[in-house]
Length: 471
Image (cartoon, rainbow, N blue to C red; front, top):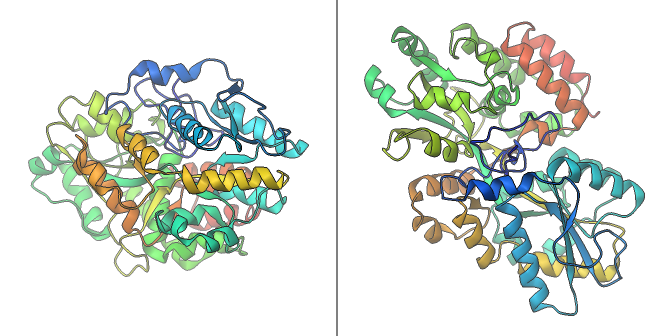
């Protein structure tokens, strides 16, 4: 079992393929997309799959009931991410002998259960690691995490050194409740250059181009798009981009803000119709609804030339580099941001995916513990040492000014592309099944599957989703 630190972690995620990297699922982060490609040993990733219980990493108490001045911090145990997190805690403790942090690690599913229980019992850690979005909203509504807006206002330099787009999933009702951290993983449009040369066509520059390419690839016996549709969340990425490109980030923002009948917005219905137009035109590989993404079968279709394009997360780069022969190393993999939709309101620079991971401060921690947490945020989260570690494992940290370090990597062109997409995005939409509540997310995934199978209409999809807004 491998857990990837890249796609958003959703409780419905299946076991991941052994060819993928350890990421906090789909995690979801869905993955730390380049760990294997950058030479991280498979054994390091597998090491995370032992006991699901907590492991104290820095000694001391592991829960919220530590001594008044000793802060506590829980986070995931997958490697190499765990090593980076632990190193930051160790650096902090070495520099601050009188204000220590006791760290405890958990496997992904165990962590989600443990943190929910601890919050309910009033025994949560000082620093709460998470994914932002819908889960963070539930913490805020229950009064379980502190509003960090005043702290960021008093420390503008800390906020300014992070990607502006990373704050979206940390912001609830206009206030910041989490410190953005770690790495970014946008969704991008991959394509097989050899297949495009074979058919004699160019990468799409608009939605119209996509629809025009579909019959050309089909005529050549090549599927226009690979899609692991059985996994459901892969289908979701198409809607995330189409909603943005057609209606702008405000379109899904209305859903996130629980506005009544937000899914029935004319722009939303337009986006839902467009994706069904693509299905009806045979835009996806035949039998896509029985193909799983967690087996990397969708990636194999791309690098073997059976499909021309694939919309997927940046975490797939590492798997394709490892399993695809010379597909990546030989320069046959192309990639681009999703193209604009004619007449749409969304800025072409916008992206979707995982804008970062998030650290909140438990509202019931002592004043001393809270000050320790803020000092940790200010001095160690995405410090130069930590930034280097993220890059060395093939990730793009959400810190500005890391271009020179990316340029020295063997995958410099790729990492600089990801950095550019993330840092230049005017809006970075969080993956919907992370942004929504667990109840709404499961309803979403079920209805997206039906939408792609053409078993419900756009209007039926909208009605079904309107019924769970705010739940």
